[in-house]
Image 1 (cartoon, rainbow, N blue to C red):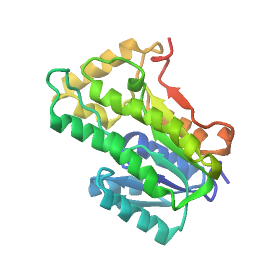
Image 2 (image 1 turned 180 degrees about the vertical axis):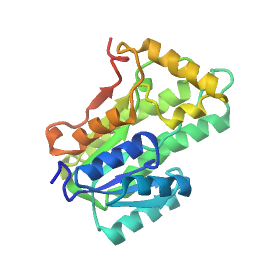
Image 3 (image 1 turned 120 degrees about the horizontal axis):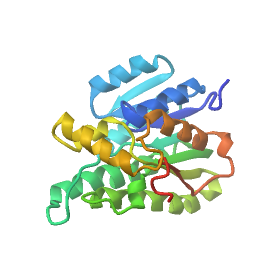
Length: 249
């Protein structure tokens, strides 16, 4: 039996990137995982890849009715949640002076509003002594150009981890944030219109990382497993940077 043997986990944004890699790690460690995503075809592919102990529920975390459907499915099939990884989010560039209401609403609805209600609506099913992991970002601590709205959402996520630690301490639910540096995930494909420009963005990010490269989804997944398991039994309210040193020096 692995570190998460017999646990029930929910991962939002679990059909690709960090969410998918984490779902694979959770299942390998013995958990049954519920994954969400906006596109059914990607969910189907993820379920096939993971292979066992996984249930997919199509939905958008910014849509509260979709969250209700997710938790209804979890309640019907398992009746509880031991681990919640609030991972779903969006990122887009917009220089100050060009930021639109649409850009602001899109990013905040997914990264802040959606994450907040992902956690709040899970609480009736979340077991006392459970673990909540929030996907933040080094962007919440850095002043990256043209990334102010995204960065502000991730600073809010970091703040949630602190406040919810105190809100949930009587239930002995640990709340932590994982803050990835630049990670090679599909989110990069949304940052530029061509493959060449995406490659240039990746190279630019890598040049600022002390380790000289961008990270992999699996490197984040390993950190999330740590925060989800008893290995981190005395860790709560923390922000674990997995960033190749980017925000550390």
